[in-house]
Image 1 (cartoon, rainbow, N blue to C red):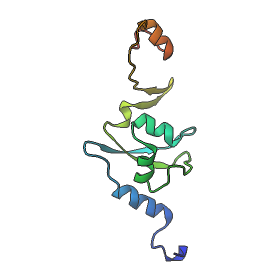
Image 2 (image 1 turned 60 degrees about the vertical axis):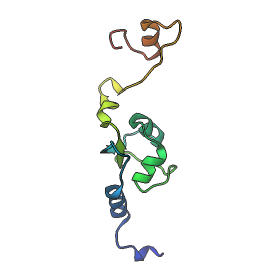
Image 3 (image 1 turned 120 degrees about the vertical axis):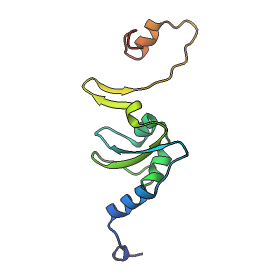
Image 4 (image 1 turned 90 degrees about the vertical axis):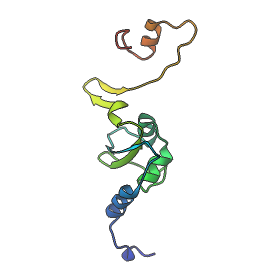
Amino acid sequence: QPVESYAYSQDQRVKAKQNKSSGKAGTTKSNYVVQSGDSLWKIASIHRVSVSEIARWNGMAPRDPIKPGQKLVIWSKAPASNYASNSSSGVIRKVNYQVRNGDSLARIAGKFNLTVNDI
């Protein structure tokens, strides 16, 4: 179809797609504003969803470029604030780690650049 035949602008079509999107049962919708240095993979891993899900919810292809300031809809089991937050010290992420034979709190803390008290 020629571009002239679209009833809405590209931004309006993206917003309509985002408003109609839905996640799995037990998930909540949140809005994410892309920051400098973000990638779909990084955003997906923080929110524990797949790149293809983010693409589908936002009417884009998994390899489409993203840019700072772009608004994305994310459906995840917990609000994004539980997984990542921007602070003066950087990004904070919730990480699950399986303790291995020979590990100590000090060794685990060192792997993640934390103090034992942080764990």
